[in-house]
Length: 116
Length: 112
Image (cartoon, rainbow over all chains, first blue to last red; front, side, top):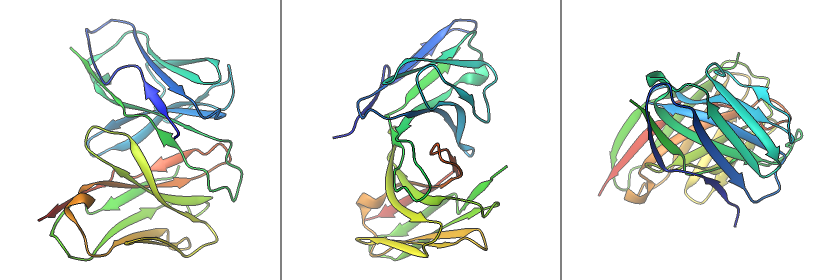
């Protein structure tokens, strides 16, 4: 059974703190993604990675950075947390996904982050 | 930039009713379109995938259609059940890296 795990389900941090969100997948997938989900806005892509040590900005990368030192692990870093980063954060992974592929993204359960 | 819209944002129906959820996208240059289900406080699970060359896909009581030229997809749920209550999201794949653009979802409540 495929599995994507996230380090925390709920997290409460203070403004200005450095926050690490960890994601691990056990499917040997090349691609990994970080999204945030807010009511009425759907999922918005923050960053994605298509290989170890490779990263690409998504639609809303400001205030975030990522790290992928091993294929199975993708970390999202909030260098200095702010209240507008309170959100649900979802991690996903997928195989390469050439045209015609039926591969999908597999999601973790999410981390609900509250920044006070 | 691709934009994906889902209407309605919320829907409440009695058990047994057939229903249709709508998804529209602005750029027809997509690889495929997927429908996902999200239960409260959980991640997303893929329900159906339609390749850009296909018109529809079926899985059990679910049927998804795709009209790429008009930028529309529908998810038809037959004989709805309380267990179908969840948020349904559509997403379009736009490149080889399996990058998706998601709609904001339709929250479905099926009343017993």
